[in-house]
Length: 176
Image (cartoon, rainbow, N blue to C red; front, side, top):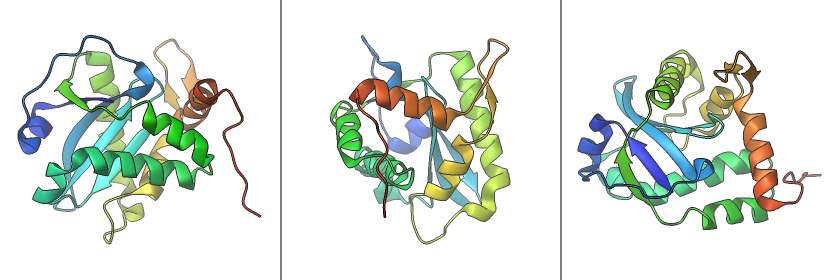
């Protein structure tokens, strides 16, 4: 998985940016560190479909274990979307190796900044008792956004299509 961080986030992680040779847009994310209600939050936006993951209330130790926290946040959010566990595992297995690099594309940075800006309006959905903000992530990913070609998309529906293409099977499981 490639996490393309802003300078502020790279400084917080205390990591040097690495160069990326090959990237898959489905496992590439742009990330930013912002302050929401006087607490540190990280917003991850998928490069392919603009799906957003929100982490909130991060402490110094959390930044040392960012790889595990990001994978767990993806798992929690996908579980709340009722995505099949096998598909979640397949996505996570395809993105085990983490690389932290600089942001590379102004368009993708603008999309990430828009998601960060929108998060400020969703502060009522933030749960102060957990790092993993599934409610805010689901709401942020369900807003209609422009795709740059005078069309509009829902990031969550685009993620469903991408996961279905990755898995080759239906991705939803139902709970009776």
